[in-house]
Image (tube, rainbow, N blue to C red; front, side, top):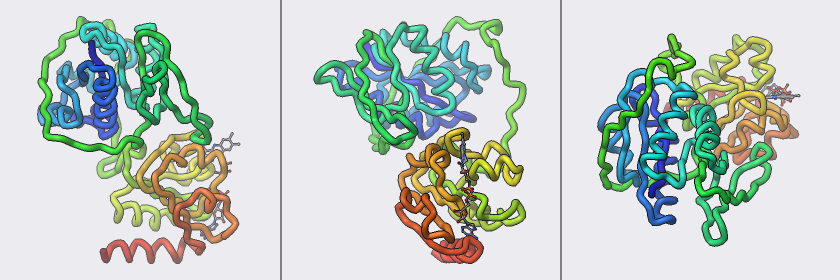
Length: 320
Ligand code: FAD
C-alpha cells in the first residue's frame, strides 16, 4: 500500500509545486500508515531526484526517457496508472498546475478513483476522507468526501509551505511498457524566451492594466519586474488590444497565478481579473483612483499615478 505522487519536472528540474505535492503526499501517507512514492517522468538531475526525499518521499520511481520530457496526456496517464498499480497506491497526488490538470482527471478515470482538484487541506479522515477545495474562483470552499477505494487529489500550488528535512529517498528505475504508438501528440519544439520567469511558477508577479495607456509605457513594469526577479502579467483588455502577448493575460479567462507577491499597476480589479489572482499571498495595488475596486482585495495600496510611483518604487528597491 502507498501514496503515489506525480512529481512534475521541467528541463530536468523538479518544480516547486512538485515538492509541495510530495510533502502533502507524505503527510497523507503518514495519516494512512503507508509509504510515499514519488514518480518522475523524463530526464532529471539525480540531485533533484534525491531532493524529493527531503520532502518525505521514501522511494522515487524514475522513468528516464527523453520522450517524456514534455507532458503527453495519453502516455503519462498510462504510465502513472501502471505505477499506481505496481505500488498498490490508494491515493495518487498531483499538483493542480498546467501538467496536473492535463493528466490527473484521466488517471482518476482510469483508476475508477474519486477526484478532488484544487485541494487546500489535508484529508480529514475522522469521518470518511474529506478534502477541502477552493471553488467559485477562490470565493468559497467545498468539503468533498471521496468515498471510492482509490482517490486522486490535485493540490493547489503555493498553499502548503515547504519544510525540508535531510531524509533520503531510494531512487529506482521504472520501466513501463510504452511504445512510440502510445504518443498521440508529439511536441516538435518548445519556444522559451531566455531570462523570463514562467508566470505560473513565479514567486513575484508584476502586472499592468489599461491604466498604463499603451505598450510604449511597459518599460516601468518590466524594470520593476526585473529588479524583483518577477514575471510580468497583464489584464485581459491589455492582451486583447495587443499591448502585451496573450500568454501574460491573467484572470477568469486567462491564467491563474498564486504568487507570494502580486503587484497590480493601473488595473481596476474587476471580478474577472481577481478570479485569476486572488490566491496570491500578498497583493499590492497601485492605482490613481482611490475608489478602484482592487483596493478592497489589496493587502497594501498606493493611491497615485503609476508613472510617478513605479519608477520611484523600482529605484528604492534597487538601493536595498
Ligand atoms: P480598466 O478597467 O480600464 O482600469 C484601468 C485602471 O487604471 C483604472 O482603475 C484607473 O483608475 C487606473 N489608472 C488609470 N491611469 C492610471 C495611472 N496613470 N496610474 C495608476 N492607475 C491608473 N479581465 C481580466 O483582466 N482577466 C480576465 O480573465 C477577464 N475575463 C473576462 C471574462 C468575461 C466574460 C468578461 C465579461 C470580462 C473579463 N475581463 C477580464 C474584463 C474585466 O471585466 C475588466 O474589463 C478588465 O479586467 C479591466 O482591465 P483593466 O483593469 O486593465 O482596465
